[in-house]
Length: 507
Picture 1 (tube, rainbow, N blue to C red):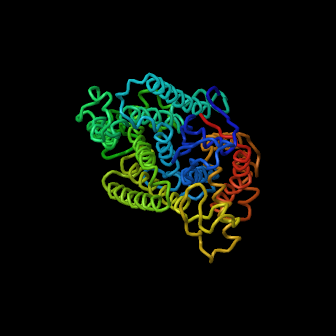
Picture 2 (picture 1 turned 90 degrees about the vertical axis):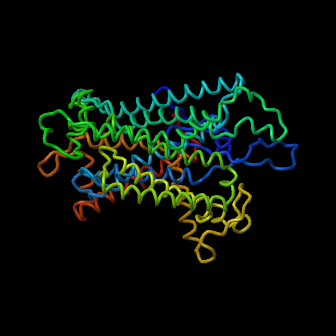
């Protein structure tokens, strides 16, 4: 597919170039913390290194693991908690999609940190760079939608093409990425100090006459930091609760019922029941629910902006721990508020209700804080710690002293095991879109191949799990072990190989 880039570079070169090349829409990003310079033979002092925040990759890796475990479950065997909630409710499977939206928003300011400046500059190069970013945003959004449409049409049989969905997971990711990226590009400048402040430091106030007014800056900042998600939520609430579906079968329906909701009416009116998911009255990735889904991506955007604006705090262990603790507290409060709101507006992924968005935003924020605390707060052992190189508790490339993970009570075998787990999560997090695409291809293909088993026709995917595992262990356990085997024996080796070869697949 045009626009998908497979780059093969050394790890040092990748970190150095990630800032100018940008990131994938699902968040392959390197976070610049200090300036980077190429080593020169005549220079005796080593140049400062720009390091990657390991927690970003590790958190993406956790979500990839969750996606593979959930997506690889066997229908008819899997435990209900590993499947999407039937109607309203919240399961483990319902955390995957909002997680991907969150990490996508997290990557936007990391890849486009240059927009955190005033738009008054008359520099032609800056305007050209802005146009290049806008074109890249549109291209990535279009590619995400195209890849999603490809997966929706695969394996290209007549019955699939006849009922082809115009919506889907990657299609929604593309639309949300476009909307939130444009929000950032349009309003991020308002977070930059005003030009007039330079006069107090004795410097000339270049372009001060053309600087945006204080009112304009305030309005842009307010819309970016809170007005946008509030507007999307209000639009959903008004369209959902002020609308009564005119279908005869919905005449006596009161309350929030998916089949008689405003979303069902809009989706079915736009493209017909035959193009909804499963031929139902509404589509879980429909038009109106996207209004609230953007809030999950916006939440990741806010966290990403905090990382970019406070690089110095994320470059030292103490600062990371304080920021991570704040994220955990904010996430816990948001999740609690979402559960309380769920008493009024039911929590449900299929309609992407505001309570569902608030709960999942809280879980993802707290989860990222925990991973950040572990990987960049010195609680998780590093490869150099495991090997025993360097000063005890010293973290290379950061310039800060960390307590040795686990202290002297942690055995070498346990430490090496944790290092392997951490490296694996980071490897999976380097290519999140690729593993989503690959897992979908594998599952769709094996589910499409028919096999006769005990006098009935089943898919190769189901028969493999039943023959190998379900014949001698409980169904839910067999389904989970089946998913774990695919993760450990198929996806993890590919992830380690890609990182070892320096291959990063970007859109």
